[in-house]
Image 1: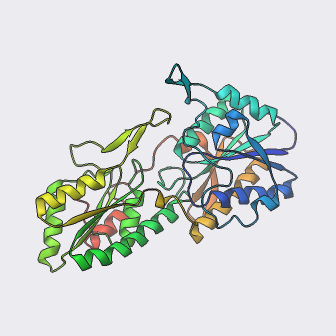
Image 2: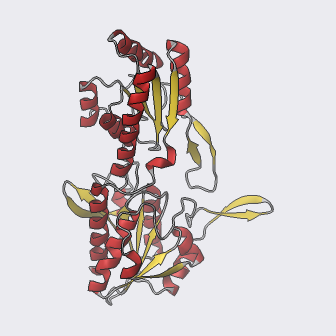
Image 3: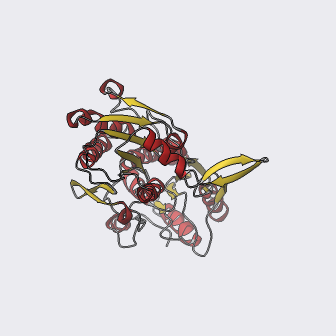
Length: 365
């Protein structure tokens, strides 16, 4: 929404799933705002608050002490897409477009700009709202690390830390009982969490969506380790991994979400097949939402704070329709349209893949 005056009123929301670092961004936005003479409004529960008109002013005292806290003080939702709004009619869920309601509240609050913190889905919504007339700035958040326009999204490092610590602990019990332990991790259609978590946690096999695996290669790796005197194995499998020629394992569908597919269950499938085809006792651990919770790592605290402070500076200089991004060691900005043009997936020639293979990790291929 074009205007010539000074930017005075900023809205901030956290969309999509929660993750460590969200509060650090909110703090990074709110604290510098007073230096620009801005008022910050915290919009509740992601885009739901924008549609339903739920917001309150954020002051310095509201963000004091939240740097290390996980989650988000504003609340979040991955079912609040204004363009995909579920409504019950005649005992049936009907999807409606509520973007006009979002615009009405934006105008009623007299906002000069909206800072939206979220992942790929949030950035797609930001792009649409920008075309609707809102002055939008995006801050990339996702544990999946699947946004191409930034070298890293905050939340990913914290999720990888959880996976790494889990594998450390499972290593000792797998070794003690001479078992194969399969660890299922998040990531949707990208394998970054499994790749980086498995590499840092010393997994023996890593299975990711981008490299469809072959069942026999998995069995061969486990039996090969046994011939070397290693009577246990750790398998780190991404929720979106699938066998060559096979399909995704899903738990169901939720039409309230923009992407209705609920992934999950591949860990159980892999564990069962390993036990049936190798005769080795196998257990499975699904880390699930453990990867989303808890305090952010120092890396994520720093990155989140930088993102927040940079976003408010973009707003002050009226650089709308942009997303903050990490490029090397510097924070830059890119067009939101460019940020969502391509999903960042693991490439076969990625250096982490090369390194994993070099130290003996199998991808089942």
